[in-house]
Image 1 (cartoon, rainbow, N blue to C red):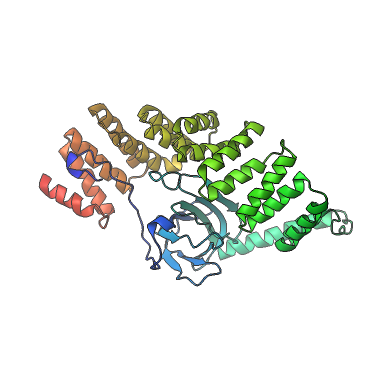
Image 2: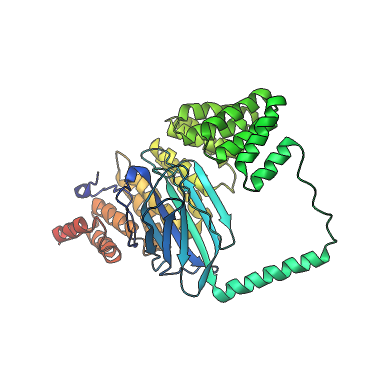
Length: 438
């Protein structure tokens, strides 16, 4: 709840969207994901006016369209979840430019209070114009970074790659003739799957399993079933693989992720704990288990894992961010601040957002002292120093300064917020506040 008149106002995170969205009537916030992205040149320069379009693959559904802002960012607040088998294609069009690289990350929600910080279900990176479809999880969020080059640069790069490939082919000795299709059932199934014949691959494995059941065949069948959204069968197949070979790594992790995908958190945790016993230091298992611990309210266990994962100097920023959120939820503001500071130091380009979240973490406490206000003000000032156009940091700093009695400073930052975001949902209240202050 927004508490404007207390002058300590921990307002919820606000949506900064400049897109003319064509929202379909069936899109609901509880069955959608938020999309945020940036579009830049290969030198990192933001591109404005890029036309973005999201289209449901294999389903008649009104496309979502918009354009990138001056700073190259874009937001689609409510991209609908249309079922496990329906993903969203997305295109980026600007006269004279072509897509040259992408990074697409899709997450499911972790908790109701921290949507979008949960398990990663998609993490695709590439340096081509073939951007993969987006996987949507209800209540989750999607981060997309697109790199574009001019048509001339794109053509030059294509020619360079072709020349390099030709030179390599000329330098290499002739290769022997391609071997025949594998005769062993596992190899044959994998070859069929690679050729896009998943159903034939599964039948090949089932036939082989009837006479020679082995853990590797069951595991491969589970992988194919999971890839075709047959999660119940996939869990059974992976379970048979683990039963035949209790030391098999990866089977319990796969089962756990399938349970998590179906919202069966307790069962997912049980499987991931079995995988952890087999692979105590496997980062993928630990990250998935920590995410589920947090989702299940087992905060201390989640913190313990995240602390171990971020002990090194090269800690992952996403993992650090999750740890900071858990510290904040546990009331350990000091450790939350220290963790946010680590993120900012390692990611100077995103420092304003990190310092903004740090300030919010301080002001979201139930009891706020003058010292807390001072630390929060410092965090918001650092956010503004890193990015003077961070409108939310100006607004929050204005609130903090009001609580500290600095009316002139507060009015200055609140006015700056209005100049940057005149149409923000809180703009009317802020204008009323400034009018009251004179």
